[in-house]
Length: 265
Image 1 (cartoon, rainbow, N blue to C red):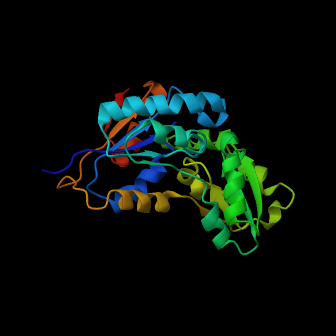
Image 2: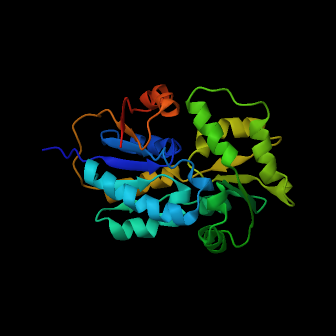
Image 3: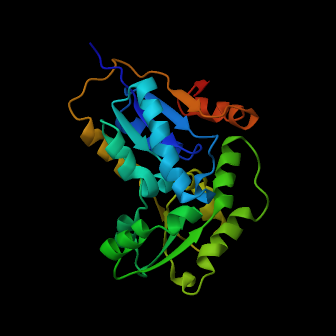
């Protein structure tokens, strides 16, 4: 019999959809459940101890309810803070999402890279470690933006951005001392690839953007190697910890990304 256990993706909002896309391309018959902790959104401005306590408990409940074969924490903030605790608590594979500093360093010609994430992510020691290990010959500049998270969410709700909003976010990164040399920007929040085109259009010079989506897809494939899948693609389920008007407005975008069913946790 085909194995119908899903792959479960978890984020505070809809940013993790940027991770779903390459995973779906790699495993087109895999059942997916997408979970947004809308009651806790946004993680990037929350207390770190709160995230560390909240995420393992939620994922424990979700594992019991949906019985996934694998969980993807499709959120840089949650991964850098809570990933070890989640792995210790759950008896199944858990894939985290971390800033793509290694590939950015490999791409950079100027040896100056920018890390664009949430406030919580860019201040993590984990980012210091990635920079030391993989970009020791680079200048690594960081900028945290809660506004860009909201811009990505608003885009998927079909709302038009305020004029100049993306340029203002980029200025927070490129306007730092040394920022004029940045040639590669790490989208260190899964929300940000959803508005990569808008960021590129707002930039006053060519920039290359990189994120971890393709690498995570390869990791999922490796961890599920040899497993059975349903014979045909199945419709995904989107789950919200709070289901209100903002979340309901995401229905068209979710349907277009393979999640026509929405339910509360």
